[in-house]
Image 1 (cartoon, rainbow, N blue to C red):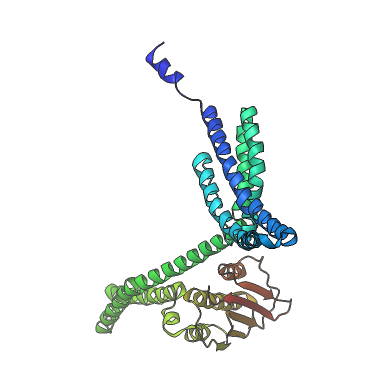
Image 2: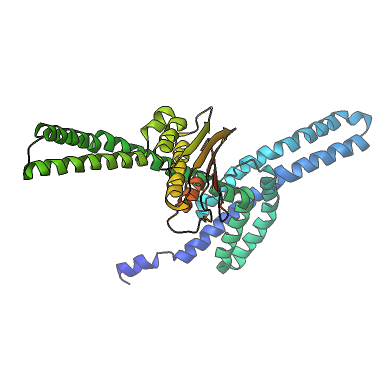
Length: 374
């Protein structure tokens, strides 16, 4: 036999190694199961039984024993939850070390389920040990069954696990929304302090050159005039773009001032009512701002309206935004190019609600409610 063959002959097959690990895991669970049954079941029940028997049948000279049994009956049931907690930690380590199964703790105290597991562990441990020793090929199934039982009774439970996942997803979504808003603010500041300022300087220089050469003619003058007009137009577009990213006035002066600017720039008369005594989070204020901005843009482009009304008010921990117009109505969130789907998505991003009422012939009312603490 070669050296390689000798080395290979000493290698334990993966299946055999797994079977031995399951066997060790199962055998290690037997004393833990017996201890769990004794501390969480036999001791409390036995103490109460002995105390009751003593009180009923003990003679006058047996009062020390009776007092001891009564004291044990009072103390033992209170010790069972603590014993279950400590044994649960040992059981979790057993599953993690020998099976590689991580059983997370429950979100809320679940002593009842833990005690139930320790009461069952003695009996299931015997059954699992017999299966592994008599029929080793069942080791994988035994490990899965034992792990499933432990996850169900020692872990957070299916409902709590789903609740944890929902909370985690909600936190992740809130973090993404906040990060996106912060990135928009950064881009707005960079454009305002960089490209926009250079455009202002360019437009001023071209304007000065145009004023200096006023009264002259020729290709050079026409080029300066065209360049100045283009610079002014580019500056106006840049300002509108920067304002669309994130208006600085929203951070400085709040929703009332920011929405007043939107209403003043709208191509139709807008009645604005803002009642927000206390400011909401920056993310929610930004969403409310863009909801109003996009809603009024939608009104001017598609509704055929002659006027609109915007009401923004805070009630407890909710910010309510209502945009109404006297247009032709018939708007739906399924239409193309209306932007209503975007409004609904903005509200949903912070667990807000979006409602649209737009009968044919009008009026159209958009109602958005946002949680102020998002």
